[in-house]
Length: 186
Image 1 (spheres, rainbow, N blue to C red):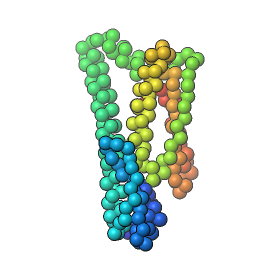
Image 2: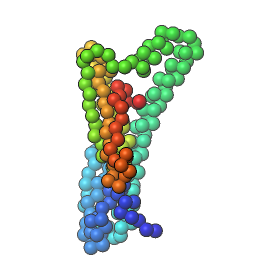
Image 3: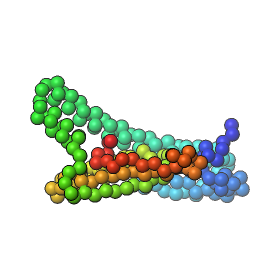
Image 4: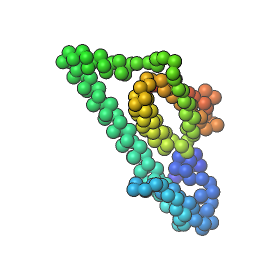
């Protein structure tokens, strides 16, 4: 099997790591520890495939955790949607009305805050995109709670995402942006 540098980029393996292994020098590896923060460990590898194995396992664990969090959020949204459908079927117009107003309310008033999040969407950062999405969901929930506590309209906070990609991407894909959003799940 032939592995190209681009193939290894998403696992954060660099040419210098491969050369260090060939020269018998140690390589610094970021390890995911579920109980604590991530840690960096310097380790000697017998061959490149051992490093690839460790990096793939770390990548998979990180992806799994991010995906699990995403599934939990989707499960909660599904539960809310199911409640809405039950209210719709039973003719509970108050509940239906409240749900629709909450989900479709746009920005009102003059008080607003707009935040732009610039993200690295190059190949080496692909494993962090789902984490970023989850973090944005958490951020929206916290902002919403703070705004509610201060009797400020929740929809006065807007976020726009801007991503930049590898230089070898098509011209129209190098820099992309989302519309302004007031809900994290749009």
